[in-house]
Amino acid sequence: MTDVTIFGKGNMGTAIGAVFAEAGADVDYRGSTDAVQPVTGEIVVLAVPHPAVEGILANYGEAFAGKTVVDITNPLDFETFDSLVVPADSSKAAELAAALPESNVLKAFNTNFAATLGAKQVGGQPTTVLVAGDDAEAKAALIALVQGGGLAAKDAGSLKRARELEAVGFLQLTLAVTEQVGWTGGFAVAA
Amino acid sequence: MTDVTIFGKGNMGTAIGAVFAEAGADVDYRGSTDAVQPVTGEIVVLAVPHPAVEGILANYGEAFAGKTVVDITNPLDFETFDSLVVPADSSKAAELAAALPESNVLKAFNTNFAATLGAKQVGGQPTTVLVAGDDAEAKAALIALVQGGGLAAKDAGSLKRARELEAVGFLQLTLAVTEQVGWTGGFAVAA
Image (cartoon, rainbow over all chains, first blue to last red; front, top):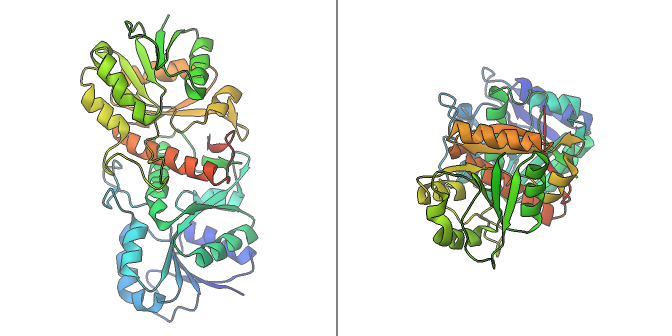
């Protein structure tokens, strides 16, 4: 049984947790006001808005050593909605990997709206989680969990591709806030 | 009647031309070995691989003044398939706009595989052309032509968003070359 610890009890955290639970994982949620406690999950999901990541690292960074850490953030400048806050040649996931050299950092779920994780479909296609990361084993384990939870998953390449995944997430959010796609829609992946 | 001049007679050029012709446009094709001739189209589409853009600009740059120039390229490093050849904080479209200050440069079609332009659907959703650009009138005219040709189109924002569109195109190509999506599939846009 895989243990998963999810930081964040919002729409995304609970939707991701439901997918993992369906796959048979034991899911433990950690909220921002919860006391700092040992991290039992082999897989840790940071399902929080990007500005909250730093605080989690301060409290838990050392506890993440040896674990898979999944970054789902879209590091937008929420004031302008016109740029990302990470350097253009980098990504939030790359910054996280630099801060957690003893963890296997994966980028995933940032291109999925929460509602599509529950509905398991986008525009008639299976909801597809795009996963980028440098550790093949960690990536395969996450993909297996996602598939076990009834979603599709694709290997988006090395962690370097997190830059493109964050661009996809950014663009999708701009289409949603301009009401050109709904929060139950967005990018689908067709075979 | 809108006149369109398409540079490139490959899969993408002919598929885009067919869409515009269905919308009622007069479409003129220009191949790489054709003699340099006056450009009659109000809209010019550069439907060529990114390394060929420079040569077209050398021959035609001045003739593009006052026209809408549509950049459909995915500026990949085709040797490594692991990066784009444009600076991380820029895009091929932004470079084109800098080289053509008297033209209205739009980014479009780079997230559409040629087969999906002909089929008019991706995974059961209408094929959707994402259009970015700074000139609202030029963008609206292109969107109208695309819709007139039986496809969907969405306003992806200012030309700054070409960076994200090129990231989407890049990611989609990596999924296709790793055979995780087919050339008739890829990213669909669901309402």
